[in-house]
Length: 105
Image (cartoon, rainbow, N blue to C red; front, side, top):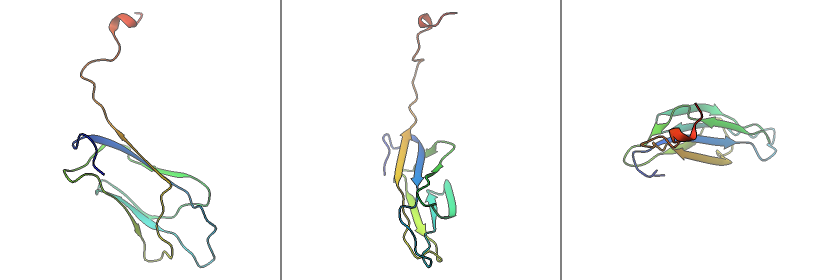
């Protein structure tokens, strides 16, 4: 995806939970890769328990945008899944939003 403006800083939250009962011979495991800035290897979601991966610092995407990859590991028999994705753009305000007259000293 491409944030607006393209040079924006972005916080990313990715929510995962296994939604099906896996057979004894099934495995869901994948790597989460975000533009080289965020990497979580061998992730395997837990059944019906939400786990959230997030960027602790805002990240900048390049001129081509932000790229999130969920890559199946060799031992996985099932494809990757993601339940929800939230991206928040950092907004810099040129001046304080609170007027000094609004604050009791």
